Image 1 (cartoon, one colour):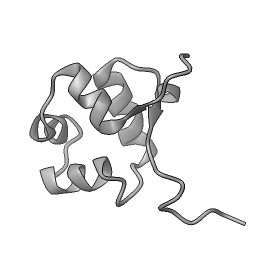
Image 2 (tube, one colour):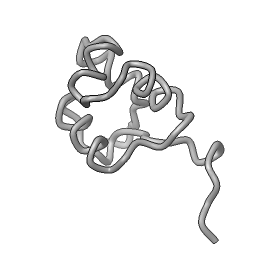
Image 3 (spheres, helix red, strand yellow):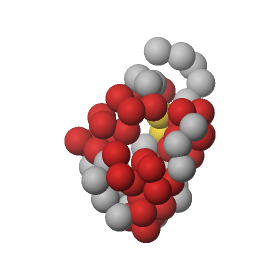
Length: 74
């Protein structure tokens, strides 16, 4: 595990994939993937693992949601 965390966009671009290509890998619509990448909705854990596997990073090295944009459980 590295101390650097990558956003979904950074990880995708590092792998050289377009949003359309990543959406196809994750079996979702491009618009849905864009919403994930913009942190409008949190990525499901099964899709997060598939994403990490596809880009070649540990799941711990990727930022999957913006905690400032989502409610925290109390």
